[in-house]
Length: 509
Image 1 (cartoon, rainbow, N blue to C red):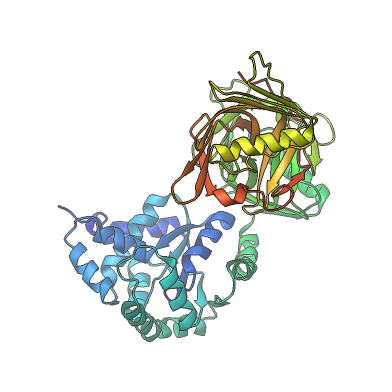
Image 2 (cartoon, rainbow, N blue to C red):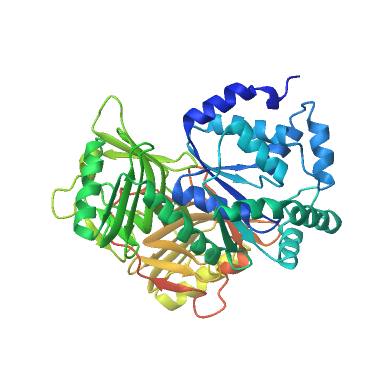
């Protein structure tokens, strides 16, 4: 069986990489210093491709190639794999990525690595990002992370520390003499470390910008012009009080910054989207790719919108897609700016009003808040479910048909309830219906959350072993939480919040 390492000849790879003229940043730090986490943040915010030398070597080790056993043994001993093997893997990954900005994580580990890389690829790094962290902190992180790696034990970890410190020092000295080392205190919390990282990458990114603007008026004008130039609705990325926007033409990379995160309502489709203080994306004709900073909330989880694209050939429709494959299509006109901003920025939203006709004879029927609260909680407890699972306020009616398990709850106004223990929001319409049985709620209507610019219902709720409870949508999306988070410890086990503007929806079948 051929090896991945031999897939690209040295001469061909070097010539191709030289033609690419990539930006390369070496990322160094001891095992457990947090390099991988910070690289993921850099990828998300600055559009780099992350290449982990360790991950590439482990993949090769598991590939069944002739180098696999050799790599496996050396990794277990905390030894460094020959430069030629690692460089070939890096070359192939860079050529296949389609990008020209790379974070090379965990390489070079010694002077021989460094010299070989520069000799073979004819590339020198723009700078070296060094995550400095104490051995005590790194050991604690490695032993607690439980990643399932067979080399995460105390003895091997300490060997890895020793090899790293002895071999990497000369690499750092070499690049430090050139003024290329950027040292980060990695012993702090992840968020604090990334703030330091942004302080390094932000100026580098701005230096590469073909267009860079500051101030709300000019940023609004230029961002809308760029969207129009790409054939996209000019109100697709609404921002407020913008402070900066930039554009790199070669890659199509764009960033937009505003003073505060905002929630925007697209009036023509009655949809809400949230926009972070910083948004990044790669734009091309009719498409926005690798979008970060734009989110919506649904099914008690937050997910990002990663791609936005127009139909080709044009149909007057625009599609929003999540990394999980969920998508929703709307008229393009809904995102054009007819007025000052084509919609409005909102801070709160109320729940969706719903009405479901009840045409069944109840075995139990109650009216008034006090008795309805008591009976609904008693029923949930009787079925082995958390008694705070269906929080209602100012209830006016509840009913139950024993034979089918059909139950309905009515309250004066729709509400949004926050389950404090898990920090999650659920919205509850004026009328909720469901079928209840031991440990399960099925065919639930009137309970919704919002995400990916669409409203969906929670259809099933069920308990699992280990004190867990799972919420599921009709499309199969699910999320599991501790059941205790939905028990009533205080007056209502959480709090009712006003978080949503009314969004008209079709009545559920």
